[in-house]
Image (tube, helix red, strand yellow):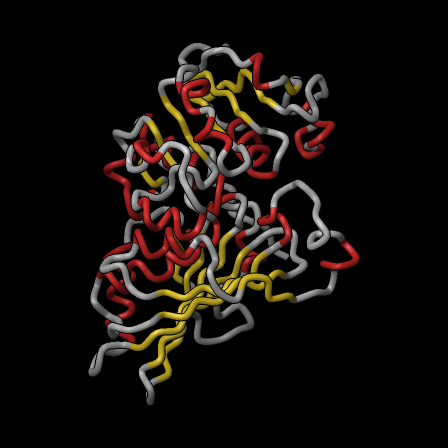
Length: 346
């Protein structure tokens, strides 16, 4: 281990979320990845599962039972597993980062509504929601962090400044999410089978999406928000659009002011609203592989209808990237460390 580096291990590193955190951590100057687990691929080299990491690491996957103590433990397990085996993993590291939905919510009733009974309800509220744009100061002191859901991240980042600034009329907000295939995880299913998914734009969750709980719990005033999820055949990326109405007498200038006040100093938020050209609004293509969230909007002047758009990479800003950003805050490192990839074009 290099002097001064923190030891980090990843549970469930063969999946997309854990693999993405591994990709980012291997390039981080203050982290030393010690162990990565996978039951299915135990004994196999990391590059067998993640060929993009060829030549970047000599690590091999180990079964979870062989985990040793570390400074930081990242958990990328199926929903419900970490909560059921909490003590086993909590004893291995003082800093825990959970990428599942187990500890994202504080409200037990909300959890029950969207997920069912929680195996460890007394732990809800002990984890800090790892979205730096909303909870930066709390994350600086958090030993236990819960990564936000990718759809919730896109929705929250787009809407938070508007509700905080009182720009929107009270009333329902309707959100549509165009979601990539990797958001479903690495385990195949009939819905992710290539002949079924390729070329498809399929509504798979018109109502009752689980990430609604995170959105409602973390938006100012707990507004009425309705999510509809649509599966596309993109491998990475989410495009969120939300529709709401401005307060009477308010204008586009007020929308700009709300975003500037909330995000003026944010390193990974870009407001995308150009008057000409073909790239006038956010597009997931241009944030692929990055920790950026591109946010745009358009106001229908005669009705006051506001359309908000957010584009993110679901595996970076939507999962591993904002979690690493939160870890940087907790450790007192520069917030952008290991996350400054600008994306590709074309």
